[in-house]
Length: 117
Image 1 (cartoon, rainbow, N blue to C red):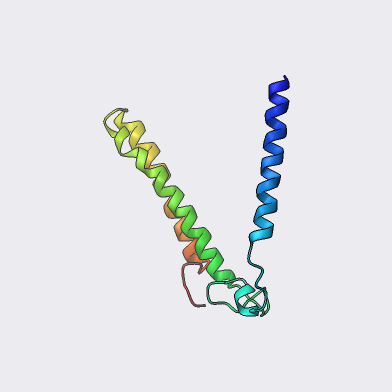
Image 2: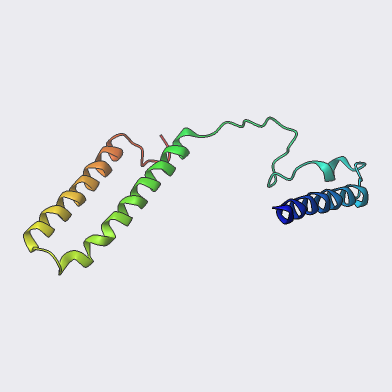
């Protein structure tokens, strides 16, 4: 028990010593305002942080994610072809693909697949 307490105290003092040395030896050059500002991938950090975001772009992203997950669900259909009954495999896979096509048709009717209105 005493060894655990001794190791804990040693760890506490060594970590505090390292933090103190780091604060003392760090460079504190705050003269250049441009260097101290965060780099935001080409955006001006001093401008308005909330730029208008296209809702249509967001919906296209959501549609892509949905179809990406659906493709991941289609992959197990192929290996199960030889392991299951042909009728049950055909009905389950065709039901799944028909549901995908109905969803695609619905998005097409809602004009979500058109990039411009």
